[in-house]
Amino acid sequence: MKPAVILVGADKGGVGKTTVSRAILDYLDEHNIPTRAFDTETPRGTLHRFHPDITEIVDVTHTSDQMRILDTLEDSAVKVSLIDVRAGQLSTTLRALRDIGFLDAAKEGEFTFMLFHILGSSIASLDEIAETAPFATDAHYYLVKNYVNDSTFFEWDPKTYKDHFETVKSATDITIPKLDELAYEQVDLAAVPFATFRDNRTADGDQASYSFVLRGYVRTWLRNVSEELDSAGVVQTLGVKGKGKSKPKSKK
Amino acid sequence: MMHRTYVYIVCSPHPRVGTTLTASLLTTYFQVTGRQAVGFDTNPYDGDLARLHPQTTRIVDIAATRGQIELFDSLVVADEKPKIVDLWHPAYRRFFAVAGEVGFLEEAGRVGVVPILLYHADASQKALQACHDLEALWPDVEIAIVSNEGAAPLDPAHPGHLSRFPAEHGFRIPPLSPEALAAATDPDIPLKELLWDAPDDAPPPADGLIDWVEGIFAQFRAFELRHALQETRYLWG
Image 1 (cartoon, each protein chain N blue to C red):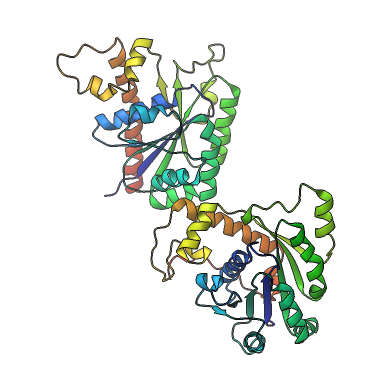
Image 2: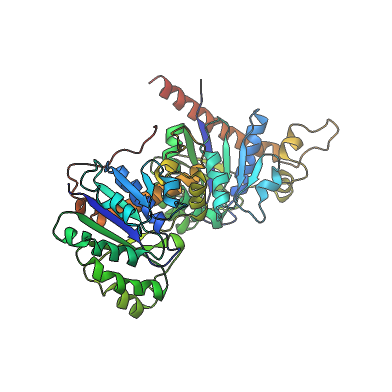
């Protein structure tokens, strides 16, 4: 498979970028696709908190950190790199990727470039689609409606919905369903990947004592997210062949 | 040797068919046979089971996630203690929806918990249809039909109605005089205290109450024995 970069971002804050990044990392792990992640939320690193073993905290506005990500794409044994772009940095990051020639390289087929654009339920957020789309002409562009935040995305207003969602013909819609609030908070508190919580394990792999009901909600949610990503052809786009889903981990 | 843990889900989509009476009688049956059942009253506002058995019943609101946790997290504990869920009719759909979403049956099967549905029949076609829907939803779960002849009498013009419910076994709760029923459901004098632990000088219980209770407990005992035999067969292959 070719090296792949998965960019997860939005210019608006609070739309659930890191939640979607975490869900994608769980999904790729379930498909036995090794992935490294870059958390651009310096210095705190929310993604790093949940996936510390595979996540580095970087500042994509710094050339040295851009080099850490992009110059190692081909040499790294791990071929998939996910970048969780902090709020407000999506346009800047895309511009930087264009300026250093990454977008052209993706166009030439050197890399697989997937852009997950997380949308919020505001006109400002939907307007980002028009701003981002020009950078995504040679990317696999996914418009992600994240219902974890109980958004409606103006589905009640067909004109507004159509004006924004149908402007980019090549984009693929992905819906992240709602997860029970308490389940979401408990995973947050446990500071483990969703799949680890589902399997009732601590970050160290020991048996945990999470609520059965909350694990059940997470299990169903992960299954629904996985079906969405399957439908969007994420694994096929990454060029992974002959690798089925792994069974849920029961023990480390 | 570990025995299976039984979870009795006492239910109907309709009100006033006697679910709480059955749940209460079952609770008392376990008490007088030396076992402590754990009850769950899913009516968070005015639950009668919690009023009748305050020491052993938890009130849970399954419209809220916390209530769901209190209920289902307890139901999947294989501690051999019988669990009795008095399913309030407005919570009926929610219960089965949540059970499906959190994977209750799968976990119950994994840990050795056996759910049993005590479905309360009534004369309506809707109750019959809802029972068939339940059988389709939980095809591997035993359904026992409860016919409370006092609370939900069947239509004598349709004598075959009960046999159309998808169940091999059932319980018949005969009608009881208003005085005896009031005595059987008096929260101030629990049934066990009234019939088993009464002082020698206590007045005799209402007419017909003892026979009524004995008849119902005999059905519970037969039901338990049948399950015990099945369990033995299971253990010996």
